[in-house]
Amino acid sequence: MPSVAERPVDRAEAFAGRIMQVLDAGATSMMLSVGHRLGLFDAMAGMPPATSEQVAQVANLSERYVREWLAVMVTSGIVIYEPRTGHYHLPAEHADCLTRDARLGNLAVYGQMVALMGVVQDRIIECFRSGAGTTYDDYPGFHHCMAEDSGQTVTAQLFDTLLPMVPGLAARLESGIEVLDAGCGRGSALLAMAQRFPASRFVGIDLCADAIDHARCRADELKLANVAFVARDLTGFAEPDRFDFITSFDAVHDQGDPQGLVRSLRDALRPGGVYLMQDIGGSARLEKNLEFPLASFLYAISCAHCLPVSLGQGGPGLGTMWGWETAEATLRAAGFSRIERRVLPHDPMNVWFIARA
Image 1 (tube, rainbow, N blue to C red):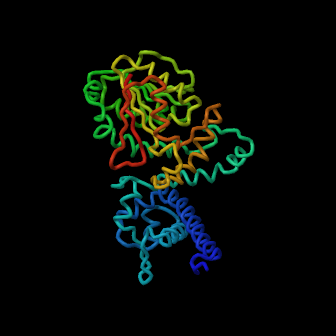
Image 2: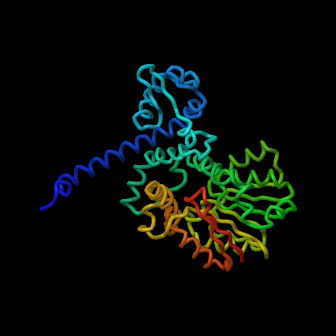
Image 3: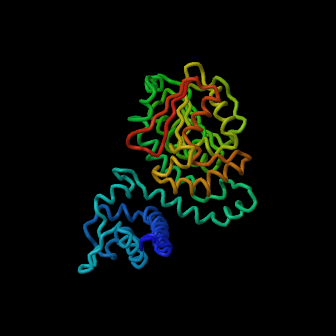
């Protein structure tokens, strides 16, 4: 006889409870996006326990909306509420992953991706039925979100952690070399390198004209004469023996021809050149990703963005979780014979490849 805990009705009720938790978390993710974009977490991080009126005043927002947002934050355990005083408080240990200068990185940034998935839901449902893909124009605000992500995962650790992975690279950049960022988005990493290494020359290429326009404006603001940004499709890219250092940050898997792109980047390297490729560090095997950080989130981003964007370009639809094994095999098939794979201790979500011809 099955025990009470093993009865199907009890398992069904337990699973229903799990689904309710999922719905709660999804709604909270959306409100994380709202709080991030409005600067509410940043405002509260510097405040003692305060009323909703005081929070709204500091953030220069409507109190009634702030109060309702705070209710979400309280019931989700993000903000502490004291009923006796009517005060709200964002603990320092919570602010450590929710503000723009968060010590552990700003996870609220990724709430924007959850909100964006809701915006494109109808389009994705059409794709499920037709098998068609999407274009970057289908995703309003995507490049802003990706720029914030890149700012903390790439640009913020560029000089202390990433470039030192390639011995002697910083010295070469100081002396003056040719650098390409393939799939540069808004170009934050390239702009930072152009500022740091004025003797080197930098080129950023991306398919999306709006991202390139933003990068060009920023380069003009910084008065950088050693960086150029080009809006173009990287399919068919062919500039052999032109660059000494090439980068791509979370950009290969959603290309129209990932293998062809990586092969062309290998050909674009001069003798002694280096290709630094960053991508999501999950496995190509689903069963190995059950404990991977934010695996469900990443597969959802893949389903709503990376997969359909690739298919929309006539690509293979590898998806966000194409796997480090596939990425490494792609590098080998492109002709890179010396490939080093790195996972940084503080960043288990990403994998870094240092590839030489």
